[in-house]
Image (cartoon, rainbow, N blue to C red; front, side, top):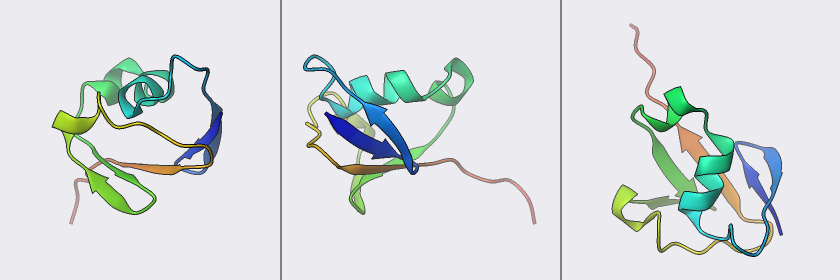
Amino acid sequence: MNIYINGQNLILNAEQTTLSAALSLFLNDHQANSSFAVAINGDFVGKDNYDNTALQADDSVDVLFPIVGG
């Protein structure tokens, strides 16, 4: 199944259809341990729901990291 995370194509197999699984493939260790927000097709998903949020083919996932500065 194809999805897009931050515009990059990611191919998931049948065991990787949750948001949590897709994020574990996409994020490096530093990113995974930092603060970030996630939206699927423009809808915010709370961190408590990552494990039980199923992804569909061609979903667009946005991972947003805070930017420090002024």
